[in-house]
Image 1 (tube, rainbow, N blue to C red):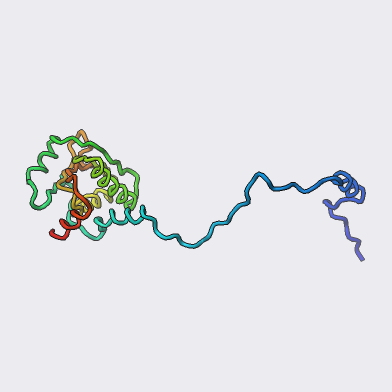
Image 2 (tube, rainbow, N blue to C red):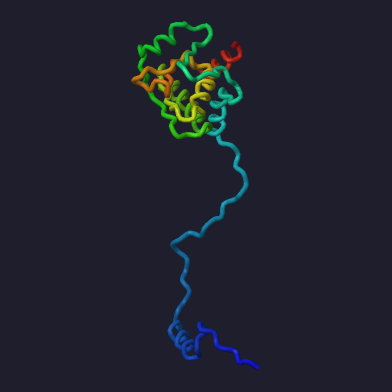
Length: 191
């Protein structure tokens, strides 16, 4: 029969007695300073008003809709019924953007959200000209951004930006201002 060897981390009788003597007068601490941690519920929250508003702003942008398919050259768009010379004014740089949105490094969903935010910001600030820098890269945003802009009722016209604003990696936009969301929906139905 083999004898069991004591475990190397086992305490001797003397060590246990020494430990008991050293903690003999100790009392448990009272919890009075740090609040206990409350576990979060995993229930889904109801959408907030901000989330609903964001979804409403993204309503105009469909990924399936493709009005502009060739993005290799200069892009030009003027909303139906508007002055056809607007695109030329944007091309020549006669209108200077009041705000610039840089979409470099963003995913399509992030870019879509940022673009909706830009259009809403321009509406609030009464800006009628903006520049959207989508970059060249793989061309994903270069294809999607113009198709999203064509769908929005506040976009009067856009054109590939002049060289000073980014040339083929950017678009200059001309926007309608002072329109309520109700007016935008009415115009969208008449298209």
